[in-house]
Length: 590
Picture 1 (cartoon, rainbow, N blue to C red):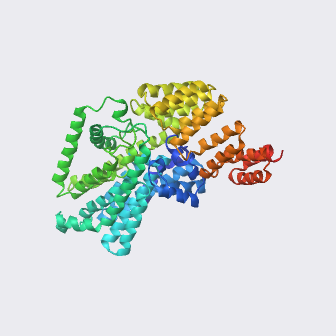
Picture 2 (cartoon, rainbow, N blue to C red):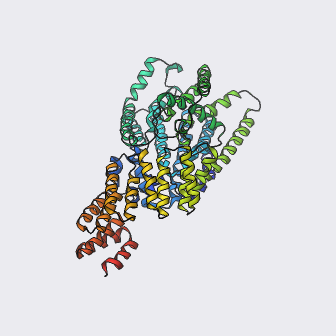
Picture 3 (cartoon, helix red, strand yellow):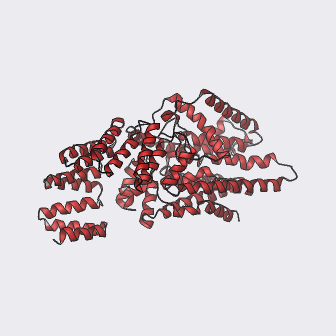
């Protein structure tokens, strides 16, 4: 019965995502414009997934999951969303069973799972296709917890190997799972009660810690790989490197902010600007008050911890699992992110699910009061979560809501502008990009998007000026170099275009589009052999690049290499039959 109710609650909130589209904020990186993912699940894709640091991380299982979706559903956005919901639903159900098995407390475990299933702060992790890594990694987190409980209740080598296997899979979905071994130590204290007489001793901590050394080794390995991936990717990133004092201050505020949003989940946004990007800083009194609140809560928790050990476990779960993403090591320009609370809030939910019934223990009307309070809370949270999920329907609703929910949100202005440009409302688009730059003049993406807009308006000279401004801020902005080259090509200056395409390749050596454009420029300059060289190099990186095959076939036809033209046609038939038909009519038949 509990499982049925959990299914109904989750589907009532998230059933609407089947009609949602992909967004223009990372979904393109993970799915819609990722050449490897767009091929579906292939051996080449498997090799790429395990060897790439694409998207500034190493998460091969996440990549394989997206590839599998494309193989099964194509680019039908609704199904990609539904798979996210499926994993969230599984996470909710497994969470219930794991805590029920550990504690034997049916209703507390059910309420814990229900809070996890419908809390509005979790909408971002579920309703965002690019956050598949969140729900997928948490699935393996939950499975690892379940395997660990089985091992504790009946130890065995094979059961322990199962724990290691599931944990490794989880780390290969998202490295945030590095804190899981510490959480297992917390669960040893409560509810598994593996400490002698409930007393914490150095000797027992050592014994239980030694048991988890292989897990800590996996965790440390994941940390090293993540550091290498982010050092490689973020070294080229134009912003996000803030002084340590500012990062520490923001971390303290964020710990409190997540709690505030958990209690009162309003003004939730896909992006919260970091104080170091557009604000003058963080007032010292805010940091001090937040720190005092955290210290005060910690004192209360440990004061009550002897009688109510779930308070200690829940509080340390929250503080510990949030630590890797609290911002001390900054990755990006966000102050905080709703998705980061997906696992950490379980700790606070544990405190609520077991703490509130404990406070009311012995009261005559305890049971009906708990049912009424719990039902009202779940209904209210579900309604807010359903409304929040609706904002994720498309780019315009998502980022317009972000503008209403936050201040000085330069990224939201930029993304709203992108959507207006896409639907042809050019004046609104330009206004939005200008607003983004008014807030953050050193935001290269807004300068770049102004360049794209004027390029589409047929003003390449003006577009070049905006691209150059973006490159002044971020010299490694490969797409800006590419677009400058295209602007020069539109002006008929193909040699200048080639120079800029080569700059794009210096910034991004595996940039297939830049190689293709160099080939196109050489074709226009009447140098077919050079064109063939660059088309072939582009196809080495992106074997299903239909435009590159098409243009390569045109060069072969120009050189009279009929056999090669036929091979190109057959390849296009496999990649894109419509393009192949056009190629046949315009290149093969004549």
